[in-house]
Image 1 (tube, rainbow, N blue to C red):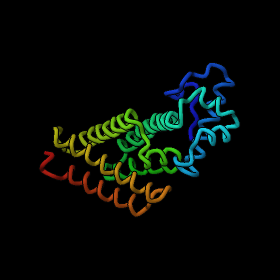
Image 2: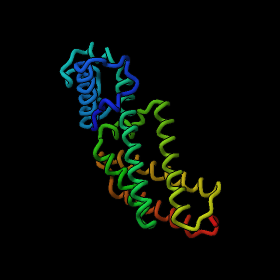
Image 3: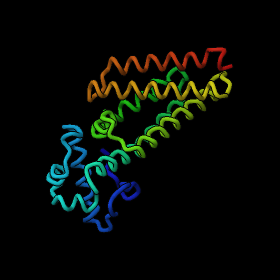
Image 4: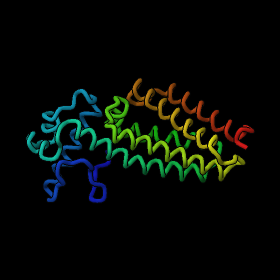
Length: 215
């Protein structure tokens, strides 16, 4: 897990840590929660376990987090913020590569990031995102779909319009749903499901590029 630094503070804290010692305690709390999530899943996460793992009293955890749900939300928000960087990197790489590699580049970047962050996968696949974070996740998917639409417009003969926008959104949502399924089957990502997801999205992109419907 990438720990929050001075330029990436955790959101949703009960109070912001002002001193270096307090910030170190928050980092220890978050790291402990992440270790439990990665190793044992959401069900194993309790305030007592977090406190013991961080080497702090339970009161210190409650000083910064209202409850277990607040810890989960703060962790998920941090991961989603950092995943925005992954998305930007993937889109940048895809925009410079052959169009045929678009799906592989974007898809593989996200698979790699999920494999590196099993704590977030436990939250994401277990459907423990708050309504606010679900909306943020939807917004990230819409942003990715918009980026793919722009790449297709720049790199092919497709014509812009509602059908293209819908097709790009559908391609992203199909990939997202199958990614979740793959990581629910296997915490490392079930390879057969991942391969099928890529195959479907390649077919989808190929159809967008070649179909008269998008001309």
